[in-house]
Length: 393
Image (tube, rainbow, N blue to C red; front, side):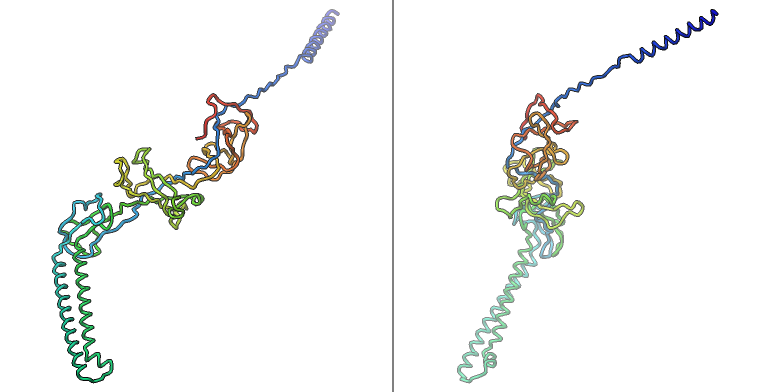
């Protein structure tokens, strides 16, 4: 009886404990996490832009070429007797400078012979004129009338014409002999630089033989390439007087960073570059060796050197000039407007190596965001950094 009683008491205790646990679990307060999101304005740097007239600068690379280049050769044959000290590779010569002297003895003798032949033909012409005068008097004294053809023969007109033509031929022979004698002295045909020389004193030369390579020093060309889409923004020499595109030539490998040579856009070559399909153009650089410059620091252009050309384009009126880094995806620009982010779609007229030129979408004093933002949302709050507003360069 006692054991049954103990069992019941224990059972009631367990049931009571279980009931207490259930009540505790069902009545336990639930912890609620409250999310208080505080929207913080993003810190940015901006620049103020303005609309104005600008000239874009199209940067290209090219190679220096000779505008005037000849393979010098003699027009008469003979032995070289003298060579000028200036006729060496690398030296510059002036138009008319004597470069070589071919032995003139044979040509002097030939000239003397041609002059003697001229004197003889002139004497024969005078004798024939005397014979014609005698024949004319005899014909007049005879009183006979003859047909015109017979009369010309009697008056020795064909013989006189023959003698006259012999005089003209002799004179031409003299002129040719004089030319040959002059050609024994080889002169510079224009202001030039000697690139190579293949003969010296004692050399035997003949017409058509290469004796030197000369390039003109009045101006050089720089052959470069420009995208077809940018050709319409360039002015070539002669199209509009005084409005050709100015060019700055730089040689990054050989010159100081601040050194450059000035040139002008000359002409468009009528073919595309095969690999890149870009338009080939020529740039003219006057006095490429700096011989006529007052400054000794003017760098000289070298034939075949690889250079950079900064070509000034036509003036773009009423546009905003903005660094290409600040033009975002899909041709948009971030603008800070009333302390919020304004994503503007812009119309870009032209881009060069560093800038975009914007016709529509930006106005004077708009503050363009230059900071790269992690979150780009229209209307996002912005605040200026301590640097404040910069001026667009």
